[in-house]
Picture 1 (cartoon, helix red, strand yellow):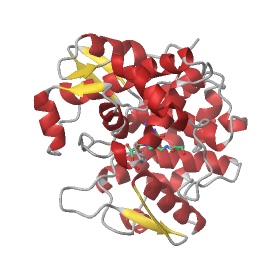
Picture 2: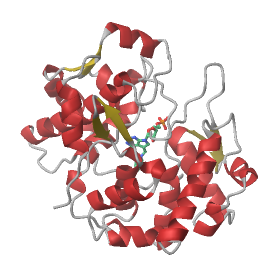
Picture 3: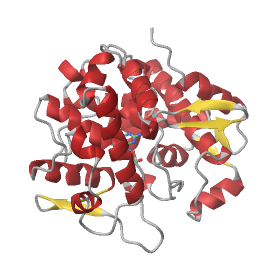
Picture 4: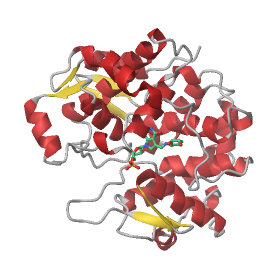
Length: 323
Ligand SMILES: Nc1nc2c(c(CN[C@H]3C=C[C@H](O)[C@@H]3O)cn2[C@@H]2O[C@H](COP(=O)(O)O)[C@@H](O)[C@H]2O)c(=O)[nH]1
C-alpha cells in the first residue's frame, strides 16, 4: 500500500498543539445536529464546472487545482468574481467559472506548451470580472511551472501522471507533490515536516467526482485521502465547537489579522482540521454511516461553510498558494 505521510505528520502536531484545542465532546452533537446535510460524494454537476468526459476534462481540472487557493480580498477591496451565463460567482466557484469560460472561448489552458510561456495579459483576461484575484503573479508563475514540468517530464500531458498513479489517489497526490513545487504543501515545525498536500489531494477527489469514479476518476483508495486543509473547514469546525482557538489566536482571527504561512498557529489550525475530520468520520461510522470517507466529511463541512450560521466569525487569513 502506498505510504501516505499526511496523517502521521499531523498527529505529531496535534499532540503538541498550543494554540488550537480539539474538543471531542462537540463531535457527536455536530453529527446529530447537521449530519442530515451529508450528501453523496462531491458532485461535479455545477454550472461552473467543465466536464466533457474526455481527457480534456482531466487537463482542465489540473489547471483548476493549480489555481484552487486563496480567493479572499484585502480589507476594503471588493470580492473577486466573474459572471457566467448571467450568474455572478466568487471564490472557488468564480475560479471554476472563469476557467470554464476561457476554455469554451478557446484559450488553450489545457496545452502544456501554452502554459509554460503563458502571457500575463492572457491570464488577466481569463480572470477579468469584479475586483482582482489575489496572488495573481504567483498564479502566473505556478501555471508556467506546471506547464514546464509537464513538457520536460510527462510528455506535456497530465494524463500521463494520472496513468502513472495506476488507480491510487494517494500515489497521484504524492506524484503531484513531488513533481510540482506549487503542490508541495508542507511545513516544518519542531524540526519535523508536516504534510497537508491539499491541492494535490483535492485534484484526485475532483477527478473522481468529475468522472463519477470511472476511467480517469477511478481510484481504489479514495478512502485514504484526508481532509483538504483549506480556510473554510476550520471556520466551520470552530462554529461547531470542535476546534477552539486560544484567546490570543481567536483575537487575531476575529480581527482578520494575517497569519504567517508556515507559522505554528497556521500549521496547528490546519493539522487540527485534518485530525477533527478523522474523528468526525469515526462518529459517522458509529452513527451507522459506515461508508463515509474523510473526503465526504470534508465536502459536508465545506458545504456547511456556505451557510450563514457558519459565517458568523471570520476564517483565518493566510496569503498562501497552498489553499
Ligand atoms: N476543504 C475543501 N476546500 C475546498 C473545496 C472546494 C470546492 N470543491 C468542489 C469540487 C467538487 C465539489 O463540487 C466541491 O464542492 C474549494 N475549496 C477551498 O475552499 C476555499 C474557497 O472557499 P470559498 O471562498 O467559499 O469559495 C479555497 O481554499 C478552496 O481551495 C472542497 O471541496 N473542500
